[in-house]
Structures are given as structure tokens and as C-alpha cells.
Amino acid sequence: MPASYKIDKENRWVHSVYWGVFSRADLVSIVERGLKDPDFDPSFGEIADLTEVTQVEVSGDDIREIAQKNIFSPLSRRAIVVPNDVIFGLARMYEILRELQGESGIRVFRTLDEALDWVAPKGANA
Image 1 (cartoon, rainbow, N blue to C red):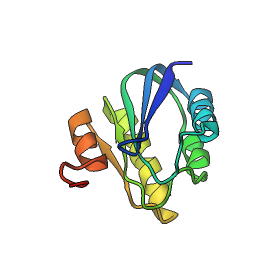
Image 2: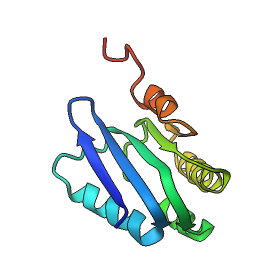
Image 3: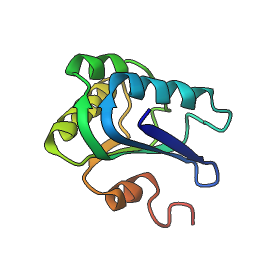
């Protein structure tokens, strides 16, 4: 599966990385693995890094189905980092669908630095 994640308990966020062919099955699998991880906390933030994805095998219907699942807290800050317009469109679709369900902390970015500033702004814990 071309996906992995790391949970940073100290800073309270999850870093998910996807590469190669991005499929619905891979996305569902990593979500299920994360939910079973004893270190996962729904109140954590998340960065989903898709910058190394080379091919997309996820449809609009897949995004609608996946967006029905409430994985993180509605107050969590979540960032999706994308490499191109196709993935940007799918990520924005997900963001909008989650927002319609009350989750307003998801944003789509083009760079990891922007995503980090959103999920863990400097001085937020000071």
C-alpha cells in the first residue's frame, strides 16, 4: 500500500503520506489502521501529504462516501497538501462535504510549510 502515517503525540497531530497510485482502497485502509492505533486521538490535527501521488484512482463518488465518516473532532485542524489541480479539486470537494457536516478545520494547501502553519501555528502552545 503506497501510504503511511506517523502519530506525533507530543505535538498532537498525525502526518499521513501517500505516494504513487492513490486509490480508494488505500485511503480506506490507512484510515482503518489509524483508527485502531492506540496512539490515535480524534482531537489531534492532521497533515495528509499527497505531493508524491502520481496517479489518482479515486472518484467523486468515493470522496462523497469517505466524507460521510467522522474520523477527527470537528474542532481539529486538518491540512491536505496536493501536487496538482486534479487532486486539489478532489481535496476541496472533501473539505466542502465535511464542512457541510460541521467540520470547519480542513484546508487544502500546495506546500507542506503552509499546511504546518495551519495545523500547528508557531506560538500556539506558548
